[in-house]
Image (cartoon, rainbow, N blue to C red; front, side):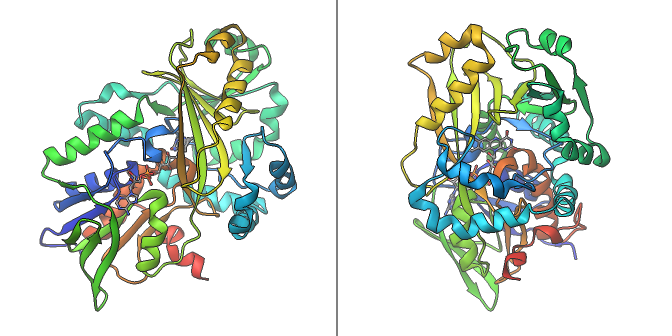
Length: 425
Ligand SMILES: Cc1cc2nc3c(=O)[nH]c(=O)nc-3n(C[C@H](O)[C@H](O)[C@H](O)COP(=O)(O)OP(=O)(O)OC[C@H]3O[C@@H](n4cnc5c(N)ncnc54)[C@H](O)[C@@H]3O)c2cc1C
């Protein structure tokens, strides 16, 4: 039943997911309180430092059949795209087990891809609309995104995923060597084949974009509160207020969109979610001596390589480790190593002392799907977290689904696959 009176809705977390949810809730006519201890668009959020990709083709989970064979290698090889800190292994073992199990057969992957697609498919259109309203339309670039391989065989080895994309309606083009050279002349001869996701794009500066969305929300009447949520005051399953380190904030509904900070609050709201940080890194080379058209993803480095206003951003790496542990900046050296291999003529520039290094927490569930939907302890609390590698892409669709659940109108797609209760089974 649609709400007939405006509600006061507190959105916990001003990363991309919270901001998109807040915009859609506001659009439905409700009053928004944005609760965030840091600056929206600040370095504390995963939404600041990602690879900038907004990708309708982001349908595949990370765990795929055969991954289990690679896990011992991940534990031993310190220079690959995926690593587990030995000292954190006991704490992450059960998550890792579920992660590997989630990708154990192709039927599961196909189901997961179908469930991820509604969260991805309109991402570029939606972000363009938000960016236009926020006066930062120039931050959205739609030049496609290109996976590059040493040869066609590398692409063929991933053909199952590319076929799933095609079946779902994601457009892509195969790029032969001559065309690849024409598109990106600086790219090393090591890469001789590409596959371009034609309708994908980038948000050139995700931090500036998030800051602009927060300003838009405030201009439209949202109240910003600088505080950290610590719990909920419930009475007979109804929400009275959110407790924070700055006192209690009365509200009718809450959206839990605190990224990696969501697990403890979800527990209070009745859901035990296996959410851990897949830590990721970026490094920005301020004067790389090249400008990329489309963003690139090299098959060996498994990282996003994109031009941004600050320079060339190399973003990737998966490190299973405590979110609060000190960053291991050697991971950014690995990113730089792959970039030197990609652009040998520019390699010298990647040694610049003033590169900017960043580490952030991807909020990750083991099964490749986020948690979106009513909390078990109260239908006044709606979960919106766990978007792992693709939250920038999936933010707008998540926001629309959350707003529909809160406002009581028909959801734009079936929310069942994203229920946090799947982990209680
Ligand atoms: C290296 C890297 C590359 C990536 N590349 C891409 C990409 O190219 N495309 C893509 O789609 N995705 C990408 N991602 C993933 C994407 O960045 C995340 O999925 C997304 O940013 C998650 O958004 P979020 O709003 O859930 O969390 P965050 O952006 O982390 O925001 C959560 C906010 O909640 C606040 N918070 C935490 N606890 C509390 C509390 N108790 N009370 C109030 N506020 C709280 C935090 O301060 C933070 O600002 C990448 C991630 C990384 C690390």
